[in-house]
Length: 144
Image 1 (tube, rainbow, N blue to C red):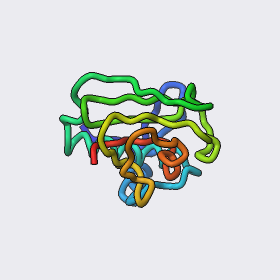
Image 2: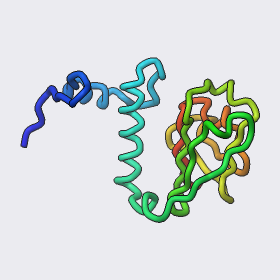
Image 3: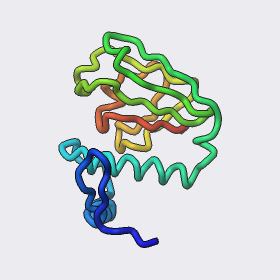
Image 4: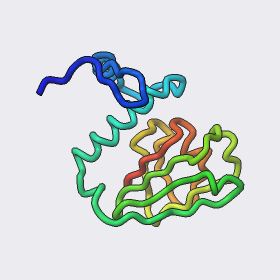
């Protein structure tokens, strides 16, 4: 079945699939957070690409991870199996606003596949969220 260039969703406006394809083709690095729809598209692409390359990372039980500090209640983080961690903010706070809030990672070194440069890690121990989310306000960590 051929994919139409526009799609309708209940309760939402139309979706221009041709425009999405153009955005996907142009995305080589994390987009600006100014365009959330493109940022979401980029993130989904990265996650699905990792799942295609390494499906074993997405197998195994979920285990909640704990944050500590003044904004610990705003952190949603879990480990999947032994080699994948997802960490996202529950409520928006700019990276500088996380102050002394930290996420405690399981033993080992971890790198963020959604970030680049120094923001990609490696991370270990109790990581300041302002560092973990400095580049992109979501982290998808794999063992380094």
